[in-house]
Image (cartoon, rainbow, N blue to C red):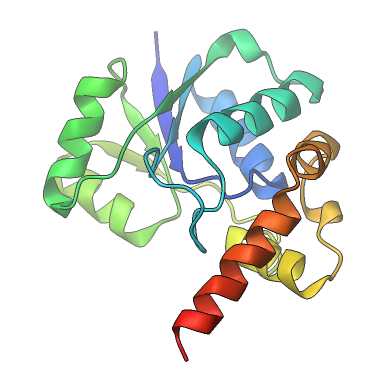
Length: 177
């Protein structure tokens, strides 16, 4: 069975992620979605918990036409502070895989150095479809819901995610003065 991994923080899960998952499922029989920085939450770059991100992803993929959720595994993986080791730590936490789907330069570099196939999905509306941009729009009260699935938007609303992100940004701006 061909298996690939897609590593991300999914802060939050957005339409670009869905496009990458669809692309990856055309190339492999099974896809492991690795939820990175699993131990971190309630921070500017990582406002959501691993469990919240898993729920966003599951809700979104369940509703998505053309995605067979039975072909997908989701595994949260904590960070490792020593960069060259994190790909090896990931290896012991996920089933064997043959390919990595990533547009992240550092991820691609580390896997290429190990001789593992790296496939770059096309970037889908990259200027707007980034967690940084979406979180920024949330804080500034700008439109963000068209950049995520309906299910992710509903989940963020249900957990009062906007209030959390605004509070985190407020605390950060106070402490940097």
